[in-house]
Amino acid sequence: MRQDDRTQAPLKKGSGGLLGRIFGRGEHSISPTDSHSAFNNKSALNLGDIQGFILRGYRMPMVRHFLLTVGVPTQARKLLGRFVSGDESAAPQITTAEDWHVGFAPGPGDNPAEAPRRKPDYCLNVGITWPGLIALELRDRVPTLGFKSFGAFIAGAAERAKLIGDTGPSAPHNWVGGFGNDGDHVLVTLHAISSEAMTSYSDRLSALFSEGSAFREIWHTDGMAWMEMKDGKPEFTSKVPFGYTDGISMTTIHGGPERYPQDHQQPCEPWLFVLQDEAENYFVPEPREIGLNGSFAVFKMIETDVVGFENFLQSNKDKIDPELLAAKICGRWRNGVPLALSPETDSPPGGIPLDQLNNYEYVNADGTGDPKGLRCPVGAHMRRINPRGQPVTGQGQPGGSNNTHRLIRRGMPYGPNFDPKQPYDGIERGLLGYFINSSIENQYEFVLSQWVNESEFAGAVRLHPKSKDPMIGTQDPAESIFVIPQANGSPPIKVTGFSTFVTTKAAAYCFLPSITAIKYIAQLG
Image (cartoon, rainbow, N blue to C red):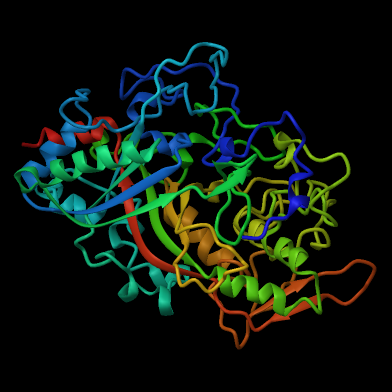
C-alpha cells in the first residue's frame, strides 16, 4: 500500500526497528516465575505450562495453520502427547512461554547483553474446538469434564457468528476449508524463521498427522510478513493490509514474561488471558488438570478489500484529504503515529520515539482530553476496540479501566504486498491469526458486538444511530456513515455509502490447553 517518504519522519533514530513490533514486546515489573509445577504459587504465572503465544509474540516472519479432523482417537491423543514429550526427535514440541531469549523481548531478570541461549527455527501451538474435545473422546473418558463458564466455546464460532456480525458474505456457510461444520477439530499453528524451516517442519507434521490415521488434514493456509525494499535489500515489515503499521499497541499483563514501554493503560490481570483460580468472572474448567493454565482463542481468516478501501478514500477527497481520512478511520496515521498525539500530521516536529507511540489517553479521569473526538473520532477503529479510559459500555467511569474486555491478537498477513499502482490484480489479501482471551463472551464477542457494531457504545457521546466501526464493522451501504467532528463549531464531515471492508473466510473457537492438560489427554489411553 502507498507509504510515502513522510511516513518515516516521526520515528526517532535509535528507537528500534519495525520488525521488532511484528508480534509484540513487553514491559512488566515482576519477579521470575517457577515453571516446574503446574499448580505452584498462585501469584506467579507458570510459564512452562502455558502455550507460548498466549503471553509472547514470536517475531517469526511466516506461519502455517493446519486444520485437522480426528481420525483414530487413541492415535490422535497419543500424537498430542508426543508434542509435549520433551523428545524433539519424536515430534516437534509445543512452544511454551518460558524464556526463549532470542526473538522474544527481554523479560524481568534477563540481561539483553548475554549470549543467546537458544534460537529455535520454529514455534508450534495447538488449539482444540469443543467438537474436537468430543472427537478425542474426552467427554466419554473424563466424567468430570466441565466448561460451565464457557458457553460460547461449547456453541462454537458458527453458532455465534450472527452475534458478532459475521453475516452475509461472512456467514458460516461461506467459510472455507470445513470450518464451522463440526469436523473442525484441531488447529495446529506452525511459525517458522525461514522458508526452509517451514517446509521441513510442515512435511514432518503432515507425516505425523497421518501416522496411524491419527488425524486427517482438511485444510491449511499460510501467512507471511510483508516485505519492503530498504537500502536495496528486502526486509520484513510490520505492515498489514490497508497499509497501516501494526503491532504498536500491545496488551500488558501483570506477571507476564515480556516488557512493554510504559503508557497510560493499566496492566491487565493475568486471569484475563490464562485460566486461573483468581478469576472474577469464570470457574476454571474441570478437571483442573485440563483447565488450569489454559486459555481460549478465536481463530479468524479475514479477507480485506484493499481495492475497495483505497477507492473509498479517493472518492471522498473533495471532503477530506484521503490520507487524513485513513487516519481518522483507524485512529492512527498509516505509519503508526496516533491522532491523539499528532492530529494534523503524520510527521510531527521532532518526531515521536517508538516507545511513546502508545502513551496517551482519549479521556482522562477528570474528563479532559479528547472526549468529543476532535483529535481522534470517538467512532474510529482503534478507539472502539480499545477505548482506554474513555467511559463506554461495560466500564462507565472516566479514567477507569476497560481491561476486562481486552484481547491479545496474534496475526499475520496473507497474500502479497498491495501495490496501489496496480490495484486490480485479482489476488486475495487479508489477515490470519488468533484473538486470545479467557472469556470469549466477555472479551472477543463483547468487543465485536458492543463496541464494533453498535453506535451506543460510547455512553454520553452520541454517535449517529447507524454508526459502526468504519474499518471492520458490518456495513450496509444504504445506511453506513462515519462522522468526523470538526473544531470551533464547524459542521462535522460525514462520509457515507461505504461497504464492509472485511470478510470472514474462516473462524473457530479454540481451547488452548496447558502442557499439563495435553499430557493428561494423552494418558487417557
